[in-house]
Amino acid sequence: MELARELDSVDLRGLPAHAQALFAQMRRELDRRQDLITSQTREIAWRDAKLEKITFELARLKRWKFGAKSEAMTAQQRALFEETMAEDEASLLAQLAALKAALPESPNKPKAPPRKPRRQPLPEHLRRVEHRHEPESTDCACGAAMVRVGEDVSERLDIIPAEFFVHRHIYGKWACRCCQTLVQPSAVPELIEGGIAASGFVAHTLISRFVDHLPYYRQETINARSGVHTPRSTLSSISGQGGAALEPLYDAHKHFVLQAPVLHADETPVAMLDPGSGKTKRAYVWAYARGEFDSQRGVIFEFCLGRGSQYPTLFLGGGSGPPGREQPPWRGTLLTDQYSVYDSVLSERTCSGRIAAACAAHARRKFEELIKTGTSEVAQEAIRRFALIYHAEGQFADLDHQQRLQARTEMTKPMWENLHQWLRLERRRVAEGGATAKAIDYSLNCWTALTRHLQDGAVGLDNNFLERQIKPWQMGRRAWLFAGSELAGQRAAVVMSLVQSARMNGHDPWHYLRDVLARLPTHLNSRIEELLPHRWQPN
View 1 (cartoon, rainbow, N blue to C red):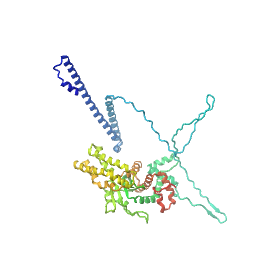
View 2 (cartoon, helix red, strand yellow):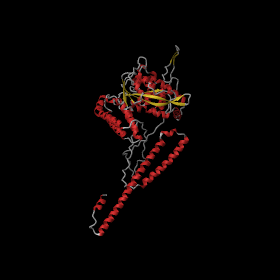
View 3 (cartoon, helix red, strand yellow):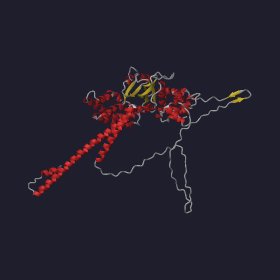
View 4 (cartoon, rainbow, N blue to C red):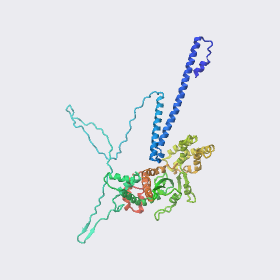
């Protein structure tokens, strides 16, 4: 373009004819090249737009193909849907390949040599079975004897399937022939009197059901591979008796969790069989965990038939517990989402001394939803501001409560104040009733609770800590689909409360449950706290 302007500014009138002809030829060649560049630029822009469109269509097809909504189709509908999707996907891939092939080749850059994956060493605590390999002959061809100068070692991981074995108790009988006296030791107390299951097998059944999420029919098949016949009815009976034995420990654990000054609360739906109708109905698991920064960890689950305020109100209201150890009404800071039920739980009319704290992750998700459904500059800016707050908050994880509060006051409090001012300004600009307005209102309407952590270093920023503890329920309902009854749901809550709390305290669930179930028959009820996950020590 610059050269064309310079040629246009040249005065050709004083030049010879052959010079004027040369200039004219240069001008035509320059115009031709300029037209070619413009045409190629338009073609590249068109191809880029086409590539973006086809890539977007492919991504949308994959969402449709693998999305949860496809599960609601009938078999015939799904077959037709999959055929259509396969045709569309093949067509789009062909178009994409053709477009890429038409693009000009870019100069090949030398590829970096592929990185060799670094294999993690096998755990040191595993038993090693050594297999030594030496040459058949250590005599050299020259006649001299060879000397061992070293060795190479390789390790392979192997497994022996679970071993079933039988505890055989033999009680000797001793008699005095003179006075006809008979002496025999008392039977060892067992968790399930008169049954075939020892504490280890009870623990294995409960762990398989509530940690590995294996339904009883699959456990029956797995046990049968070892030649052990355990019908589903037997496994369900073992699970029921094991859960009943753990209920006193569950009550003591609830007492422990509700002693925390900061609680997380949340709920998740679980299907429950509706007898007589042949269908399932929706029930809920309510979860309560001690604060994220509490030195003693614990979570408690309660299976309930609904999602109304009466369930958390009754659970936190107090009055339950063994005689002489009744639980007083819980008071402290409750960190939740903005589900309206919690308003009555936190109301002064229900119980005084309860303080609301809101989850920042839920506030952030409102803006994330805006970004997923379209382009929103307000949402993008809000996400950027939340990211800065979360980045700063991540630096405070290892501080004590007072240090964390001071760090928040110095670093994140100004960020929250700026965010508040910006949200109020943007709220006046956006349209009333729109999705952006609703996302902003969610944060502004609970601002005091949302910034509660700025007044108390023991309060977490969000409820993600508890959501991680609820995940086993979400995995379980995909495996066993529904709870058979309200009693079965509460039994699952008992076992999973103790097992998940054991995990939070760094214990292996099976070792913890096996030891506890072995000790419960002879353990004093007055010392039941010794078996709680945060206090348990292997016997």
